[in-house]
Amino acid sequence: KAGVTQTPRYLIKTRGQQVTLSCSPISGHRSVSWYQQTPGQGLQFLFEYFSETQRNKGNFPGRFSGRQFSNSRSEMNVSTLELGDSALYLCASSLGGSGGYTFGSGTRLTVV
Amino acid sequence: AQRVTQPEKLLSVFKGAPVELKCNYSYSGSPELFWYVQYSRQRLQLLLRHISRESIKGFTADLNKGETSFHLKKPFAQEEDSAMYYCALRGGSTGNQFYFGTGTSLTVIP
Image (tube, rainbow over the protein chains, first blue to last red):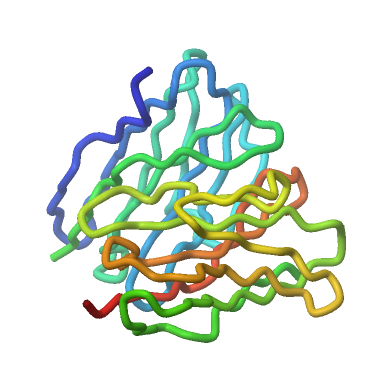
């Protein structure tokens, strides 16, 4: 079965712009989580969606938001981009119960 | 508060030598722990989880609740084991948030 698909793979934006990243989970997975990965901070949890509802949220400012659609696909949006938002954004899906995540390849966002 | 600590950022061992990647955690409930691995230019992938008590690619990890540790071990390291390893704890208010350590970069020297 297809894995977790994230689009686009690479993105370059300027400060102040906004960006939307997309994630298609594994078929049948209803939970989608987003992480920010940077060399200095490692993997930091952004939020988790399950059945179109945000179940959990990490410690990121309100500029970071997300949503999930009825087909479990998820998007995350970052508004008013800052240089420090440059990172690899990872999406992970799971069935929502016990067990591990399956990660996508990520979207590399560079803010200039 | 939930926390995962991997004290070693970098670890180098010779091929054939034993390797141990350390992971300590703090969690008030009953933890569910995982090891993830990221090979060069590949996506992050699940290596093993403590519930399964399995050995994957020769790696094992035992949950030690007394020492709050979940160290990853392999008796004989191989060059293909060179990768970034992340220890993760599953918890949070919904039980589906993962807390990752900062990772250990393992290099196996031929």
